[in-house]
Image 1 (cartoon, rainbow, N blue to C red):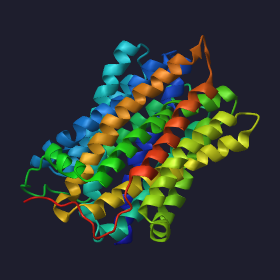
Image 2 (cartoon, helix red, strand yellow; image 1 turned 90 degrees about the vertical axis):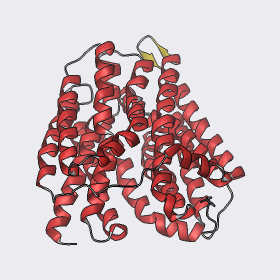
Image 3 (cartoon, rainbow, N blue to C red; image 1 turned 120 degrees about the horizontal axis):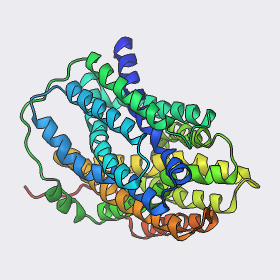
Length: 397
């Protein structure tokens, strides 16, 4: 790949995740401490991305069928999303905040799939070049965490306005990237029909259930860990959470070696276990035992890379070539959509149950995702069959 093209696409990936990271980690703190939303309302707000993830496969599919270049579609979505995010920073009541947040999520969530498709279209060898580009997305997330946390902006509207500004800049920048014309007419696929075929395989079904359950502890991380750190008296909470993205880079690079040495089942089991263990560390830790909190935050990289990313690799190898793209789409629909939605609702309810006045009993809160993570790891260990690479899901023609 030419150096100039690499740098242009790297900046494209950087902005994609800078936009998301600017508001995702800190908005829960802003809603709880500044606007005084309830835990249930915060859970609903974070559940909007899951609603959008349910809509996204169909929305993105319709966009792909239109005769528009991808960079133009992305420009419209990012520009509209930037305006909506700016509007959110001016709203103070849940009744107005929530519907605008739904519209924002519907604009932003499809940009993940579309930006990936655009990147793949413009690089010569995706398997070699895409990981080197995707790491810039993680760096974008880290950058916004250091910026917001270092300036102690978590309880203000500035992170949302930073996201809005970056989104509008991205809408302009994508128009300078190489033209990505529509690929032409594609054969239509039915996600639900493909899903029924895949779910007949026991290992795939167990993996889907496992990754869906993992959405519960994952929802607690994005919605409430920043608020917990601020409540406990930690400074630069958003910057602290960036350690999870730093370790994410490490474990993404380690994943191919770990998979080759230990096998896919052990790798995913380690990742699922990490989701439970990290919350038990938060349960035992606090301002008096900060080392446990730091370790818990650092385990995010292990938890994410060895579950979501490892699961994508397993599915890519498990299903026939003809089903690979629809299998990944079905997994995203179930996990990022349904799983994340119910995970956000559960997280919000748990925090509401353990809120007394202005005080949240965080130790009781963390027992829930910790227990879910550990029980999910046991379920996976008992029921997932260690696959051979040659074992593929049979599909009737």
